[in-house]
Amino acid sequence: MPSPGQRAVSVVIGGATLLLTVAVALVLAMAPAAGQDRVQELAERLRCPVCTSVSVAESPSDTAVAMRQVIEDQVAAGRSDDEIEAYFRARYGDWAVIDPPASGSTLLLWLLPAAATVAGVALLLTRRSRRAGRDEPEPSEAEQARVNQALDRSRESQARRELEP
Image (cartoon, rainbow, N blue to C red; front, side, top):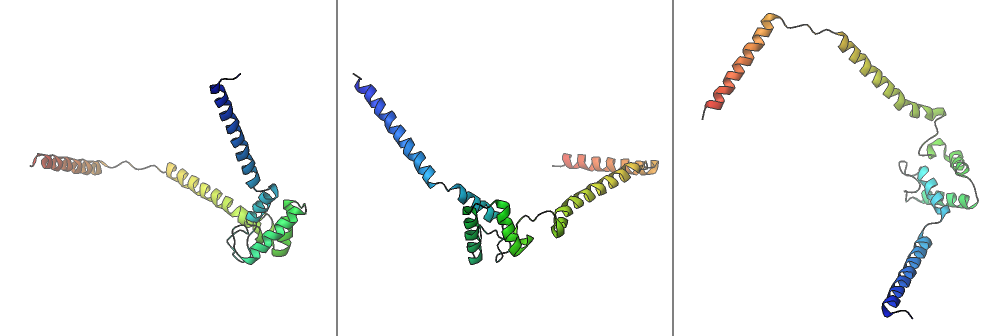
């Protein structure tokens, strides 16, 4: 027969196991379904036609609410992400997608940053090579003497300031 101490340990372990099981079940029950995750993901990739700089997922407009419902219906119908995006592009054009495809009129949007970067690097390299090709002339003896005199005067005035109370 188990001692009272062993029985208490068994009760504590059993209670902890039961609590852990209930906690896991609650988390799983409250987690959004996989379809809801897809709906949210798709809504984040589409632009709201009313609030032009906001995704359908973030927009409170009636149009965005209706678009989220259409997305949900199409996910439930088993359509792929590409098919759902194509549905909205057919109605609103490539503008409806927050990250437009790199083709047609939007190709310039994708190529412009890369072209600007290449141009900037080329400019920097050109300026660097020009600067490296220039030989800086050595100062003449008169210029060097003037610099030395200015340095001596500066040192003398600094020394005087340090000696003054």
